[in-house]
Image 1 (spheres, rainbow, N blue to C red):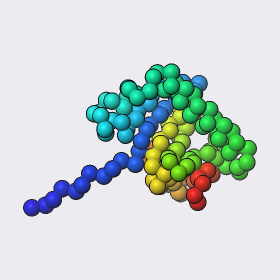
Image 2 (image 1 turned 90 degrees about the vertical axis):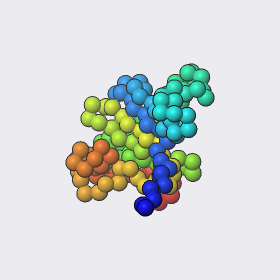
Image 3 (image 1 turned 135 degrees about the vertical axis):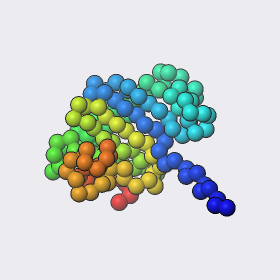
Image 4 (image 1 turned 180 degrees about the vertical axis):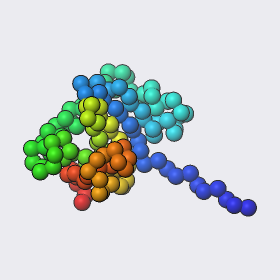
Length: 141
């Protein structure tokens, strides 16, 4: 008899998608989904709607600020300097399409860089998170 492998704990906590205007078009708390059922992460029962909107605005402002700052101090192509950063509590991974749509993954801080696929100048060649290595805003390098 072959034993089934133990399920792996997901390193991804949240997926957030913003349009080019900064409006959150999708937000899924994957850790909440695992705890409470498949669709519970789409509806945040722990926080009132105004807190969720405030969190989304703060997150978009953070991304905009870090992207602007990184572009000023980096030699990378405009818009390509900021890819991710880490704190002791989480890592934030950022990817932006040419249309301005922004994808944000919040993961465990020990997760490897979701965008660290070296060797490709085109982010569509290897995967959605691929592309050339950019400035890593991590605290632990």
